Amino acid sequence: MEELPVPHNIKISNITCDSFKISWEMDSKSKDRITHYFIDLNKKENKNSNKFKHKDVPTKLVAKAVPLPMTVRGHWFLSPRTEYTVAVQTASKQVDGDYVVSEWSEIIEFCTADYSKVHLTQLLEKAEVIAGRMLKFSVFYRNQHKEYFDYVRELHGNAMQPSVKDNSGSHGSPISGKLEGIFFSCSTEFNTGKPPQDSPYGRYRFEIAAEKLFNPNTNLYFGDFYCMYTAYHYVILVIAPVGSPGDEFCKQRLPQLNSKDNKFLTCTEEDGVLVYHHAQDVILEVIYTDPVDLSLGTVAEITGHQLMSLSTANAKKDPSCKTCNISVGR
Image (cartoon, rainbow, N blue to C red; front, side):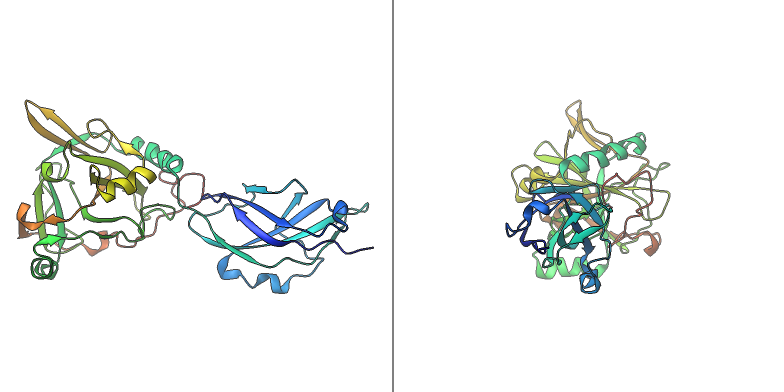
C-alpha cells in the first residue's frame, strides 16, 4: 500500500486571539485514501516535541478531512498574543478503527492575535457591572520619584513624554507593549473628595486640573479590566486628543466611550463649567497619549506612605477570576 502524502507548504491565515485557518499542499497520489487530519499544536517553548513522535502515537487533534483551509477554533483554549508551533499528518481510518498515518509535516510557527474590539467590549461589559456609583473629582495626578521630575525638567524641556505601556493587565490587551502614553490616576478618598496621600509610585506628585487633559477636544477609550489576585479591580482608560496619533491607534483597536455618559469617567457641563466624575468601586488607570508640560500643573511631595505593594508595573492578571476574565484566552 502506498504511503499517504505528507503535508507541505503549510499556510496559517485569518489569525485571531482564539482561532486560525490552516491549509497545506499534498501530492495527489493516495490522496483519495485520506479520511482524517492529525494536527499537533504546541506553545513555542515545546517546539521540539515533534522529534519524539512516532506514527502510532496519538496526536492532539483528530479532524475529519474537510476542504482546506480548515478553521481551528474551540479545539484548544488558545491564548491571545502567544507563539505556537503546528505540524500536520494525513491519516486513513481502517476498518478495525486504527489509523494509517503519514510522516509529520515540517513545523510551522505563528503567533495568535490580540483581543479584538468584540472581546474588549465583553471585558467592558463585565467591568460596568462592578464599577459602582460615581464620585466627583477635579484633578488628575501622577506620582513619581523626585529624580523623574528632575529628568523631565532637564532633558525634556519640562514636558513629560509618553512611553510604551508595560505588559500589566490582560495578556491579550492590544495596548500592552504598543500604546504610548502617560499614566495618571484620578481616584479620590471617599471622606475628603481629594486624592489619597499614599502612593505606590513615588513621593512626588504632579497634579493637573481635569479639564486640561479631559475635555470636548479629547476622545475616551476603554483599554482593559483586570485584577492581581486581589479583591479590587483595575480599569484602564485612554484619553487621546482628537486626531492625534494616539487617537488613531485607539480608534482602530479599542471601544470608544461616550465622555458624557459611561460607568467609569465622565466630563459633563453644568452652568457652563465642566464637571468630572469617576467610578468608586474600581481603580482607574488613565493613559494620556500626548506629552504634558509640568507648567500646566504643580509638583509637590506627598505626606503619606509609598505603598509599593499596590504597584501594577508589569502585574500579571489573575486568570482564575470570574469577575474580570472572558471565555477566550487570558
